[in-house]
Length: 170
Image (cartoon, rainbow, N blue to C red; front, side, top):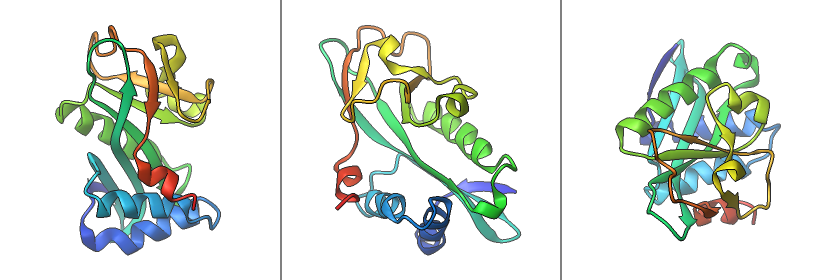
């Protein structure tokens, strides 16, 4: 399996990956499409196996309304893997590589809303322990991973995602 950066020519295959990974729902596919169209992908990676895209992950800017320091924050969402390629480490490889690329791009921390057990394997911790909430009101499933020491010092508030996330629900 090869992991590489997303290119415009990957759009159709990536749309299908997310549609199939999320049981035919297209919200995630539309989020990816809209974020790419708006040039808001900080890191966007595809997993390729036998010349076929089998997985995709996207990291896009997120904001925190805080009373302290500014922070360069991104949200990990969505990550999708074709059903026939799930449980083979594709998603994990995409996430690990994406976190490395975010760190290299100067990102301070990554947030994710998802399964605690799954994302804790990558070092994500409950965001509320860092004083961070989110626009969806989730607690247990809303997590953060600082990418360097002190990344979240003096930062607290509500994290908001790009408007493309809300637009995809319409």
